[in-house]
Image (cartoon, rainbow, N blue to C red; front, top):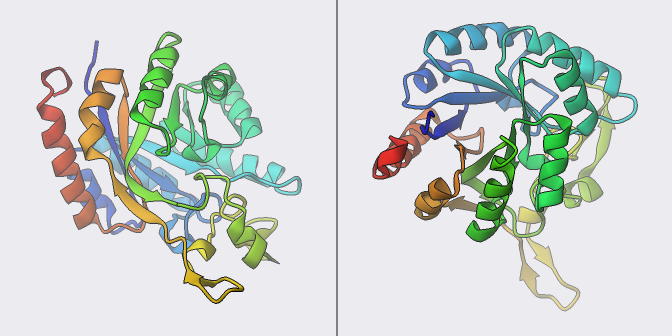
Length: 281
C-alpha cells in the first residue's frame, strides 16, 4: 500500500507553473476563468488546460481542476459544456461542489476522480457519505472541524475506500463557514455580462467565484462602536501528525493569491514535518 500522503498546491498563473512543477508536491490545482471560486485574474483560460496537464504529467504531478461554483438554472448547460471541454484536456480530477455536475462527471468521465470541494461544506458523516454515494473518491473537509471530528470522518470514509483531504493553510472566515457565505451577495451582488458565461453574479462567492470580502470591512453599530470580521490566515501544521495518524490522504495549501515563493516555503515545512513520521515519507 502506498502510504505517501499528498501535498496539493494552487497554481494561479502560467508563469508560476514551472516553479510549482519543481516543488516536492504531488499535485496542483487550478481554476477556469469564470467557473471557480477565485478572483478572475487568478484563473486560467479554457485553452490553457491541455498545456497545464501535459507539463504537469511530464513532471510526475497530478493535475486537479477546481470547478466549484454552483451554476444557476440558466448556466447549467454551459457549465457542463465547459467542464466537458476541460476534462478532455487530461485533468486527473475535478474539485466540485455541485451535486448535478458531480453525478454527470462520474457518469460520463468515470476515469476522472471526483473530489467533494471545500465549498460543499461537509460537516457530518451523513454529508460525507452522500458524496461517497455520488461517486466521490475524496472529500475535502472544512478547517472549522476539530481534529477529533476529522478523525471520525476519515475513519468512517476509509471503510468505504473514500479518501479525506484537509487544507492546512488558508483563510478561515469568522463570520461564516467556507462555501456558504451570504454576506458578500447581500451587499454587493450585481448581474453583469462578461462574455465568459451566460451571466456573472459579481459579489457571489458561491455563484461566480468573486467575493468582495464584505466581512473584512469596518462596520459601525448604531451605538457608534466600530468593529470588523477580518478573515484570518490559519496554519494548522501542529495538528499534521494527528491527521496523518487519522488516515488523512492529502494536505492542501489554499489561497491562489499566494506567490510561488511563499508556497515553496510552506511545502518545505510540510514535507519536513511529514518525514518525521516514518510511515509517510
